[in-house]
Length: 88
Image (tube, rainbow, N blue to C red; front, top):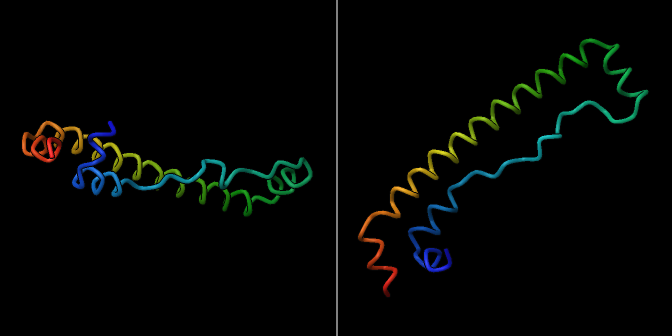
């Protein structure tokens, strides 16, 4: 892997990958009293659901982007013109 990282084309493609955020961003509060308050007050709970749904859709989109870029990168590694850069 280290010899592939010396090729500028490969490092440029690796920098295009999106950054994923931690999945616990919009979880319910940990303390029991706050959790009950959130669950009792329906509009607040609804906002949590909507924010969590939006976050999950964005994460799925980013993961699909990562998958597409990884497939493109693995296909481009088979390109013989990159081997010329590897020898130098």
